[in-house]
Amino acid sequence: QVQLVESGGGLVQAGGSLRLSCAASGRTFRHAMGWFRQAPGKEREFVAAIRWSDGNTYYADSVKGRFTISRDNTKNTVYLQMNSLKPEDTAVYYCADRTYGGSNYRYYIDSWYDYWGQGTQVTVSS
Image 1 (cartoon, rainbow, N blue to C red):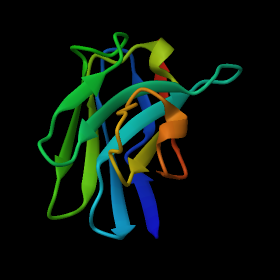
Image 2: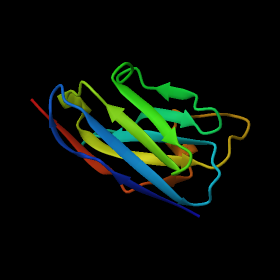
Image 3: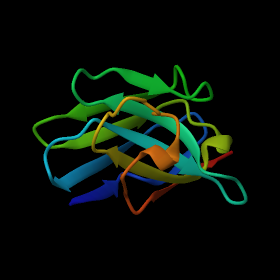
Image 4: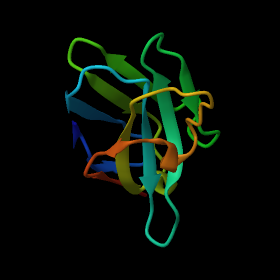
């Protein structure tokens, strides 16, 4: 029902910036979209999420003040602007889509989301 296509990953030096994009196709309604990342040998961790209806945002403490999540309703696309990148930000970044809000909002939990993108590699060098 939903396909997520990511782009924007790459190699950048510490202190630099990257902007990730994730375009959704299929159904046009959704409750939220989010970004997660996974480094080698580590579990997938929450990065940021945005509620589609009003644009309310949520961030992991590790990226707060450096990363910004946003949406374009016309394009059904979510973005992640990453500034002041650090080597510890190196990971595969995944976007995710949640169809319904339900009774409990679990933006920080990966299993809460319904669909996932293929992932895009972000590498931050020293």
